[in-house]
Amino acid sequence: QVQLVESGGGLVQPGGSLTLSCAASGSGFSRNAVGWRRQAPGKQRELVAAITSGGVMSYGKAVKGRFAVSRENAKSTVYLQMNSLKPEDTAVYYCYADTNTSLYWGQGTQVTVSS
Image 1 (cartoon, rainbow, N blue to C red):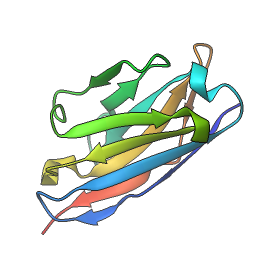
Image 2 (image 1 turned 135 degrees about the vertical axis):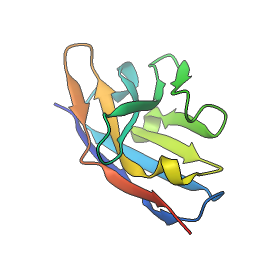
Image 3 (image 1 turned 60 degrees about the vertical axis):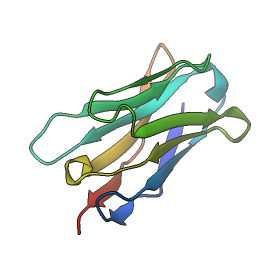
């Protein structure tokens, strides 16, 4: 069983930066692929960024070059550094952990980009 708790969301102006954190409880964090997806009102949940247990990163097209995902296994935490934020980045951001047998989700954190 994995529990995930996100933090760091909020209101930011266009062009600004924000860092999200997701702390995991339960064993085996270092063996899991983890990442972030987001969902805007009226839209499907989409990939933002992911990082494998070996540290291989992947990004959604909309955020590539602006966002960076990282993980700190000693703290069982995954981060999302978001730069050059745009209004279209406004969404609820969810972190997830993929254990290969199950997929776990956090409760989500709201990110609003607006002037």
